[in-house]
Structure formats: C-alpha cells, structure tokens
Image 1 (tube, one colour):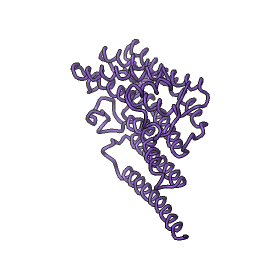
Image 2: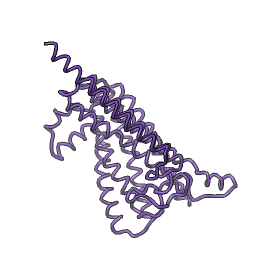
Image 3: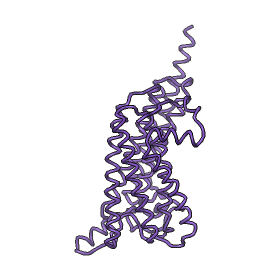
Image 4: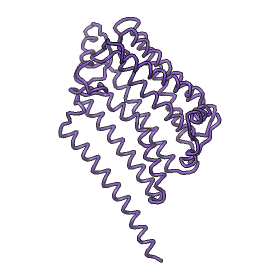
Length: 334
C-alpha cells in the first residue's frame, strides 16, 4: 500500500475532487470503491424517502437506509484519511481497509433489500427470510468490528511522523469510534418483554431493540428517530462512533495553535478532550440503560452533564493558564 503520510499544512496543496480521490485510491482501493457506493446509496435513500410513502416502525421505510448512508459517507473518507498516516504493515492494513469495505458493502445490499420489501432490517426475525438477512448482517458486523480492532492495534503502533499530539488525537478518536461500534452490540440482546415470551415457549417478530423500556416504533425525535419517551441505545452508539471526527478536529485545531500552546499543553488538552468525550459517551449510555429519554434528563443525568462541563472548563483553564504563566516567567528572565 502506497501512502503519502503528511500533516495538515502539507495537505493544503491537495485540492479538487480528483486529487482527493487519487489520495484515497492510494490508501485503499476497496474503501474508495465503498465510498463511491455509499454516495450512490445516499442518493437512492434520499429518493426513497421522497417518493415512497410506506412506513416501518413509525418512520419512512427508507429512513434507516438514509441515516446509515449518511454515516457511511462520513465514515469512509474519515478512515481513508486517518489510515493514510499509517505506514506499518502495509499488506495487513490493505486487508483491513478492503475487508471493512466489503463487510459494509454487504450491509448496503441488505438495507436496500429490506427497504424494497418494506420490512425492518435490525433485529427482524419475523420470517425465515428476515431472520436470514438479519443473521447475515449480524455476522458481517461482528467481522467488521474484529477487523477494525486489528487495524486499531497497528494504528497504535505507528510512531508520530511529524506531530505526536496530532497523531495522538487520531489514535484516541479511533479508540472512541471502536467503543461506539461496540455499544451497538448492547442492542442485540432480547428485551425483557421478548425474553419473557421466549422463555414461555412463544415466538417474537424481533430479538433485540434500540429502545429501553418500550418496544421500538414509538414517538421519536424528528429525523433522528431516537425515542423521545424512553431510553435509546442508538444515542450512545452514534456519539461514540463520531468521536473519531471530534478528536481529529480537536487535534487539527491544536496543531494549528502550536504558536499559542506548547507540546505539553497540547498533549494535556488532547487527553482532556478524550476523557471528557468518553464521559459523555458513558453518561448517555447509562441514561439509555436506565430507560430515560435523551431530552428528559433527571437530576442524576443533569449532575453528570454539569460535572462534565465544569470539569472540562476547569481542566482547560488550568492547562491554558499554566502556559501563560510559563511564558510570562520566561519573558521576565531576560
């Protein structure tokens, strides 16, 4: 695998869709093809939501496809960009990227199939066909997750090429993304109501659920579809996955603030951001498991959120002020 690992200021010379696609292609042909496939999937899903009046679990039948299409269109360029910094084990990394692309491409086919059939994709075991499709998706997701772990291990071993703080932000972001992927497995367990029916020898149309405290398909937040009345594990799943983009953005901002902050400060701020974001993931996960809707926080949830904000502000202030004091002392020594 040929990579051109450069840091932000060097990459400003690369512009235009053609140049970006060539950079992606040099990193992973398979993931680049998946990115283009995801763009097609996105267009198809938008068209489906627009013209198809059918609904599944209270939402347009193509809405889940649309949300996943957006996620895929964001995921593919993110990992292509992140892994272009990895020069270790090129054959293994090529396999990781191509295998992940193949697994997610299978998911796209499954989403389209169920949308066309007008059936829910996740947890659906209502008919032999639905159960088979869900089984295939569960297998591909497990394989996808395990392969991502392999890529993460190699990513961790990659030494900083130019700026260790920026590289750290990418590593921590990928760690958060893996955590977000892993939280998705919490949804695959039978709900208490489903378990009760199964233990009694009955059958259920779905095994697993997004919602905690009620069946899927109730009132939800506009567009996102997250339950507005009960806990919803998709929130923590979503927040965790997009930690990769958030930490990469923070790393990029700190990279461009090298004249204001020294390396020690930037390292501390990067770690602080990662810990705060991890706290947010933990908070919304516990909130969902308690059966509480995101927009109906109780005192316990409010305390956790306020504590995260206050702790983050205080930590950031201390780190920034320490640097200011050091600069003043340094200037006064002349």
